[in-house]
Length: 534
Image 1 (cartoon, rainbow, N blue to C red):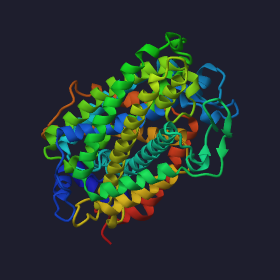
Image 2: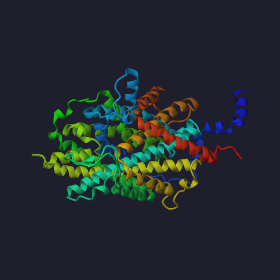
Image 3: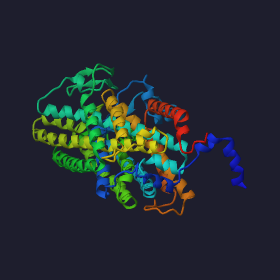
Image 4: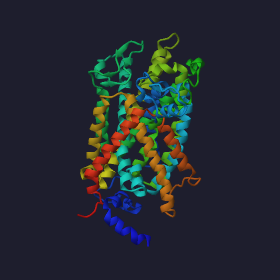
């Protein structure tokens, strides 16, 4: 009866029917085996774990951790930069709404534990879906199989923003470390060619002298631009070559992190840890929200599912191992860094670890840190490169998957005849990331990536719940324990962290989604395989 009555409804409202159309998991797997679009399978559990660690460690531990600790400078008139959580508290308690974003201070350790908990919950959801649907595209593909075409388009469009913002953020951090590396050898290129054209809070040197005021100035971040294009060439050459390069870089940067932690133990000043929580829980929440995007490493692991030799076994291993290793390393660096220098001195610092070493190396007894700084610089540069490599890999695979489903032009899913990589998607993604990387600073870019990441995680967790109802008997290489509890907690914690992001970031995010919906209505829905026959 219900089935019969639903048929005329679908005929009367073909668009509504299409929006809710889901792609079967079996069909997704079958499409991925098409020789014209088939990707080369070369990745094992170590390479997958290294891809995840490469993304998580390089993008946060050397770059945005400073912004998470110190927050951002802003006056009361700039209320749009205040976190959404502050707006809610202002409405409920009638407290003063101040502009700017509070930093976590030394309590960044609590922020990292909170982020680790959220990522563990979400990571388990990813592991279950990845073991069931070992297809490129990550959350986009999972949404197509569980929530329908419209939600799949929204999350795919969101993932493009997520990966682009992440890559731009890391490339800006890479450029800052290149400048420090050149400075170690006494080389000082012109500031306007190593600085983003837009600076949210201006720019000062280590002595506090103002180099640029907040806003636009004439310049372009050339190192950030060039590194993205160089890695694009590597990714076009092949996933196996990219994975081998990433494995080597991951080893170097983990060694550099361990050297930093043990070398600075004697230089820590416990007084820098007081007050431990200078901005209360609001600062802790905001700090976690700022640094959260760096944990999309396990999302990047799932985007490489089609290039994995044994996805049902290896994907859960890669995702969970990534979370464990990275959380331990993050906590070690955070405790040491906040003990070395006052927390409020890291505003808009895209290279907080090496700059802290630079400040201490010129003090009496600090000369050994001069050499530690060089080691950390090399490790940090390797970390930046490996993060960029993984994020660009993930972004091009999302474009590839959406194109294969007809939601983007078919040229984006065209595979190189020799290298068997989505070459066109990789090149387009490279240029669309490289140019903004030369224009914008780390604070603006990190916020956009964070809200995209958290939104994707919410939909992935919902997808687990939906498939538990719709396909309870389908084989799962890994199953989230505890029934619906973990996916529900994942959703709630992700929304909580989203409330730690600035109000203006939410506006920008909704504008991005609106643009995506316009493109879907005018183009994608007409070329989808679920489009009504004309």
